Amino acid sequence: MTSTRATLMQVAERAGVSLASTSRALHGTGASKAMVERVRAAAAELGYSADAIGRSLRMKKTSQIAFAVADIGNPVYVEMMRGIHEVLAPHGYRVVVMTTGDTATSATELVRSLNSGFVDGMILIPLRTDDRLITEIRRAPVPVVVIGRALSEHGVSSVSTDSAAGIGQAVRHVRSRGRRRIGFLNGPLDTTPGAARQRGFDAAVRADGFTADRVETEVADDFTVAAGLAAARRLFSRGAGRAERLDAVVAANDLLAIGAIRAAREAGLSVPDDVAVTGMDDTELGRVFLPSLTSVSLGSAERGHAAAGLMLGLTDDPDQPARQVAVGPELIARESTADGSPR
Image (cartoon, rainbow, N blue to C red; front, side, top):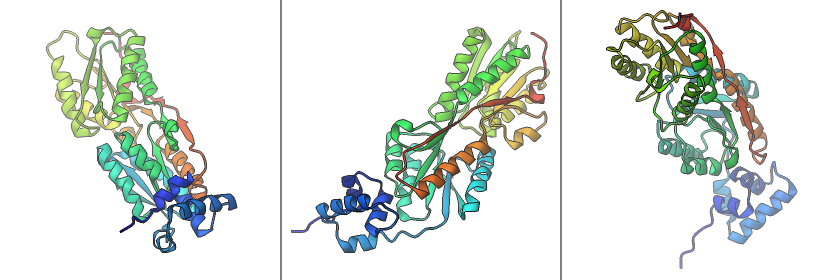
């Protein structure tokens, strides 16, 4: 009768420790005496053979950390990558940029590929998250740090920001500039940023006294300039025949905001005289755009620094408890929301 050989993952689960800790304990390096005894007892109980150990545990340090994002063309990720590089490079690590795709399934497959041992860890920004992805992150043989939603309840180290509060700052800002009819240009609502920013906008317009007849929302197909342009065209065309048109657009990121400025010009509107526009992420592109873009900074470089710091801690000690870092939003006012008189 053929028997099924125990796997390294089964040994880790039986011992109640991470896959990386199991590897070190079976090698007898980088693990406490108690850990070594615990893991080897689990291996013996499951019949994990010495030849399997030899084949499965030849883990070589690559000196590479993957930075996985949904869209490598988004400038916010460039600034974040710079922050990651600044922290990791002095420790001898290279940063390898990868794309997760725009689904939780594609991100899950990417995390699962870590079993091939091509990097020593991954800093991941998933656009969408589900239970399967979180499970794969927890099972990964190397450390994974998530930038996005806080995942403390799942035991995953993460760096988060309150983008809902950031949208609230943008709404209050245009209100203080005398704008009275506001549009919200968001990305897909089934994404982590889209859902959070919609919640922030809905709460802010209620708190700031915008009545329902003075609020418009349009959802773009993606968080890109092209998608923002198409969605903003729809937004402005709906109000073209009204006596009182939109005089402010709050966009869920800088790329959508730039699309909105182009659509406003196509509609014969001046920014900021006729319509004020805000973005989010405070990218270099938004800072050099004409007019320069008012944007909510989510601390891209700071989040990159924080994620890289968490990664260094986990590569030194994969068994340390999950840690969470929060970075607050800050609105940076520029030309695209110059003062307007009440309308």
